[in-house]
Amino acid sequence: VQLVESGGGLVQAGGSLRLSCAASGRTFSSYFMGWFRQGPGKEREFVAAITWSGGLSYYSDSVKGRFAISRDNAKNTVYLQMNGLKPEDTAVYYCAAQPGYKGSYSSLQGYDYWGQGTQVTVSS
Image 1: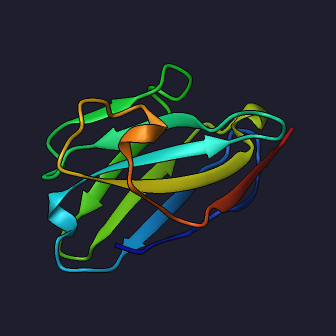
Image 2: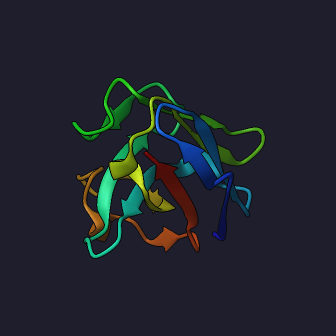
């Protein structure tokens, strides 16, 4: 599966952005999807994940209550709505796909497919 992110950009603190990740292939609904981010000088970290039907979602403590992950299986797309953005949210954001479920939604190693990333910059 190929993943292509879009929607990044420059936004002021307190603002909002919605990231999209379009997936190729006809089996999108069988993939557990996640969003990760990598800030300057930092390791890539888990942000959010969503189950195949979208019935369950998971978030890191740092974004819980501000970000929302969703998916539209008819459009082969997963979204990340980001509200109340802070300068510390500045990072390259990546979407990732996990076929089936390998037991961890927050581990990088559980995801087999990655997009190229989209830059989000939050100014203070």
